[in-house]
Image (tube, rainbow, N blue to C red; front, side, top):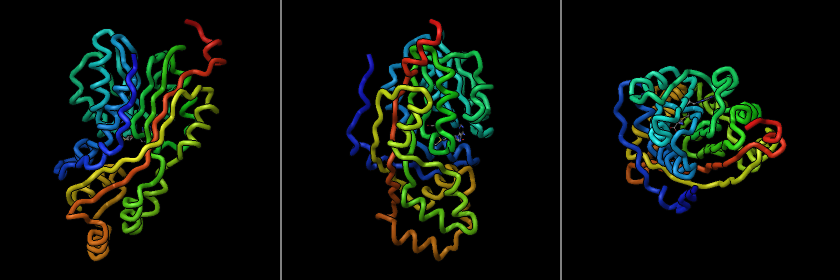
Length: 277
Ligand SMILES: C[S@@+](CC[C@H](N)C(=O)[O-])C[C@H]1O[C@@H](n2cnc3c(N)ncnc32)[C@H](O)[C@@H]1O
């Protein structure tokens, strides 16, 4: 029996990121992404993962949620986590600790080769789709990996948070380039892609949340790690950074307000008819 995703948005406000101290960008990212992981845990609770299921975690990062999925499927199930960031996958492998858990370096766009002949009960993806340019093509690849009764659960950011847009533009000359790497799309566009990919949309919700960084340093490190080091605080003029801090610091803390959405989809009836079992 599936449970509803908790809906009290106010619970997101005040989730504080740590004052990150870490020796590599992958470790910094793991430490600084608590908010997104919390949202991912809610999505996992909604997914109603059952023992014995085969699960794909697309864009698994350092594998925190992938490990939770592996616990839920138990020894008779399997979980595959993929991510194009080698350092994150290496960290994920080092902390995997479960025989039913596998990690591979790969991007969503190559899913067909990576996971060929491995039908999944659940294809899960938390805060990755806003990096994916051709969402419809990736959704088709995800669709082709689903068992007939399988489901897809995706959560992603739908538009650029104003605060990090402003912060990124302070970086010279990389600011605008950093922002061009993202591929934000709003809920209506996602719905369109889902249906265009031969999937049936079961549920889609747009939500708002706030993550709080206790210091400017914590905000900078999180954004540097999130952008895979493309945002480099050393390229920002100190005077511009001070003005940014004065303008946006709230008792020394920084609030990133995000609009994000999540959806659940499965094979559209026309697709499942053509597939066995
Ligand atoms: C915000 S992190 C989320 C990590 C993990 N899903 C979680 O919730 O903790 C986004 C991840 O997406 C990965 N990513 C970016 N582009 C991708 C692509 N084209 N295919 C698969 N993963 C991608 C990044 O390397 C990064 O680890």
